[in-house]
Image 1: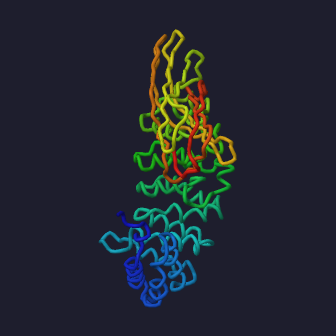
Image 2: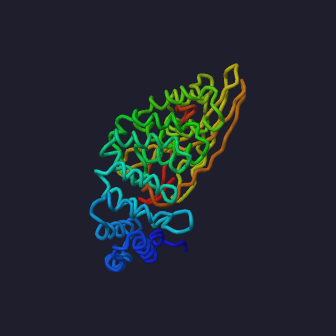
Image 3: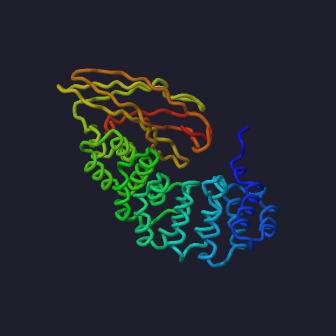
Length: 372
């Protein structure tokens, strides 16, 4: 059995932290710190364990963050193999986020020094939220860092909707302040950084689809293979939703000459079971067409309404007059993130974002947890 995530932070982590603190600052009371942490840590989950250690640091470090900051910095790896690293630094993120407000430059400098050894994007977000203009002025400078971890922090930490992190509502409403960071990193030499840039643009697309489609249009001409991949990955939500310009940016224009015929093999499906269907595509025009075939399943909710979920199909070329048939098997099985309800569901076929065919099927089951 895989080890539980919470064990990434444990008693040994606390003892290592106490030892590092005492080396960096002899006045640190390692015994009192461990007395606070060790009796409680086993009962907690991962993030709570990190927070417990952060709370212990707050109790036993100087109250003034400007005095605590150099002690924390001295506990980071020093190039000789000494210092804390990995999950031991989660609590540093939590401590800095809670206690560094009002000391923006010191806090951001420490997070910049920390990020080569452990992620720091969660730690910088309270500073962006509280002092956006000042924080972004500092973070923008990180795009020129020789360290790819620091450059990635500039992108990842400023994502408006970073998963598992506090949202940045001001940047959700208006992402313009982070576009210069994205521009600066769009051709970064590290895939690690470019993937973060793409994810930031995809975040923005959820609230400002036209802005991102226009951004991609401006940057895709003569794009390198790496930039083209980044822009397409950034457009994935828009493409999935059939945004016309996003599709056109990658050659998937709305088509008038391609038709689709859907055949559902079995219209009543037990749960768990398999939805089987065929799609016949035909290009009735006189020119070769580039086609993106997706499908959406409209799942039945408890109140009887339908909620669609789009699944990526395939991309292909259809010559003039050509007809192709595709078969698909889609498993309907219990996992964890959807409750299935019995009754009529709907399947739709989209070609370059436009729904061209659809049909109904009945799921025969009681309410079941699962995910299609």
